[in-house]
Image (cartoon, rainbow, N blue to C red):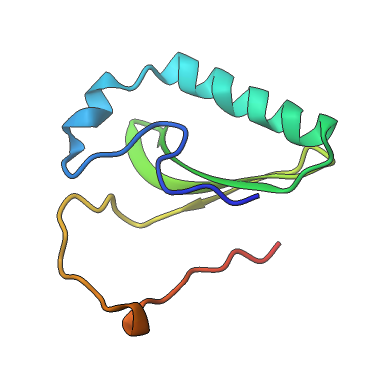
Length: 97
């Protein structure tokens, strides 16, 4: 199953929302998803902002049926829209595990 960017933590056009994220609840939600993926034998890719060593990352989290857990961290948080793409110009990021 694949979920959108910020599906766990939420997301906004500016970075002020990061101050409202309860990191303890976020970590608990991530652990719960790891357990659920294993229990239900699912492959999940879910977007979330995560905090590591005082820095925030917009990340894709992978949860596997054997409790595998991988994180893809974007280089920076997108805080403003640069431009719009037409449907023909859209590109998709694929996660291969």
